[in-house]
Amino acid sequence: MLVLVGAVLPGLILIIAGVLSQALLTILSVALRMMLIFILAPTMVASVYLSYRDVFAAVAPEPAPPDAAPAPPDE
Image (cartoon, rainbow, N blue to C red; front, top):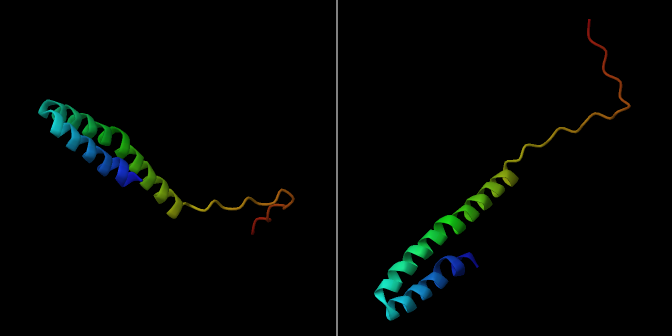
């Protein structure tokens, strides 16, 4: 789905715009490039970060049961 939104759809829009007008092609090229930078790039970085957190997550230690008395200090 990301390839469709990030490559195929903008490519088709640019091809159609290039056939109609060179100025329109230039304007849409800049607009689509900015969309890729400001929308898709942060989404991909966030997904990599979340995957990293899932893979390298620190396991939290289990809390001690509330009934357990603390161990006496060794003297």
